[in-house]
Length: 194
Image (cartoon, rainbow, N blue to C red; front, side):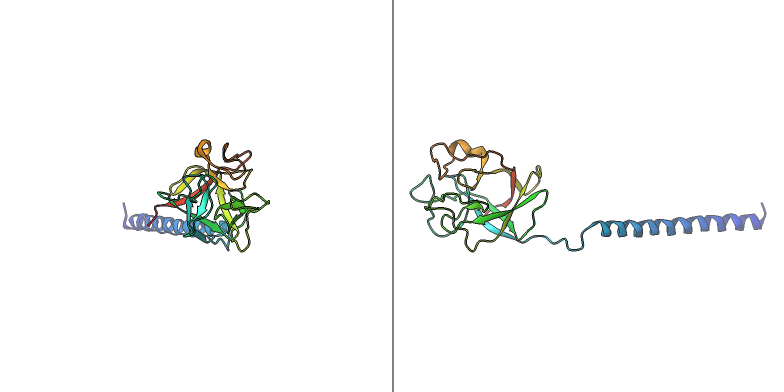
């Protein structure tokens, strides 16, 4: 083997390695550009409000208020003891897995669907004046930090925990409880109460 062929072989190896590294770096940069282009420019996470609780008596989601708000199953009001702390997003947009239009009733403190005039346990219909526009995730499947099993009651318009339907108390009919015909399967972000 001559010195010239050894140099050519070394240059060829060097060229090959350098060329491979350049091509790899170009692919990485191209891949990063594709990923960046695939994400919407204004993809912002919607704000959320914590302080929502599960009432052990009526099985509905209610805001943790210091007031003794009416509960259809108790003369002493909602029982929030032992509940998780739930976060509800607001000012979001409807999409495949999120439904806006949920409102806080300032009379009974429940989260109620804003698309109708549903009866309130405090009398009359739910008063949604001044409420944020809440959005609920639905049909996502299981995930860490999300509790499945929440549904819409088509009698009172409130969100309640379905597995507790047999023991639930609805404003319209406390004896038979909530009804959830044609409801999405909602999921709530939750954590322990501090």
